Length: 300
Image (cartoon, rainbow, N blue to C red; front, side):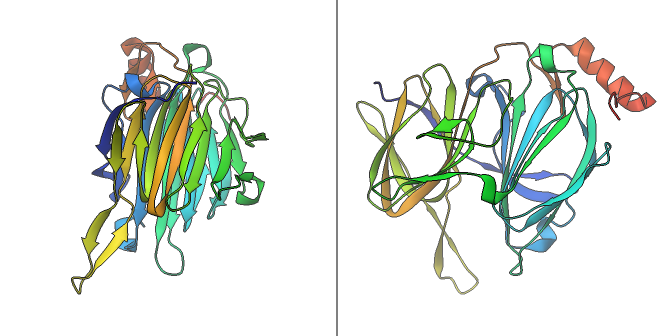
């Protein structure tokens, strides 16, 4: 067994998306070769409704999958195929855009006005770029959770882990998507498929991720409230791992919670503009031409 070294640690950056939603982007819209098959990760965490209620009105997708995971509040969604629904706390939507879909996502806060969730984009290989769109809407109660003897808890959204299989299936990149909580001061080693790219995104607590030789520590950040009193928030750090078949984390005094995501690289050319991702510029131009002339949607 070999512990994965850390390739780099980055902070997610403030970004405006949709109709003016304030969020943080961990990676995306650049050279994402180190994250292949994943293209983008957004953290939409906000306690001010005016910063998210405008939402993400009607927009197209083609050639990718979008994975939405809600932790607080809810997201109302609808699409050009007639699907409608609401994602609540703990729910997941795995949408395969395939040949093309128009949809909207409108966030709503909880009774305290809080909204929190993630959206991950996964690329599709050329053979599936024009596949029929489909949804996998997963209720929180259907996502298995495994608890180890030391109190470590893992929700298994996709892939298999510690004898449990997540409810999402039939995904080309054979990904694993986990929500991991490690209790205070616990040191934990977790397996990761050696053939897959992998990253962790920390959103609660603090901890040190270690390779075979030296620690790299990711800590929480402190922000002041209106009275000047510091309050602890998740630090929104992303840890990109190098090759190996396991990772090790040492949780801090308050424990640590993070997404652990891995997937098999597609290793194909990427032609990308906005919400449409193809393999060539010719395919990309054709997609936008179809969007303009009304022939974008292939499945109704």
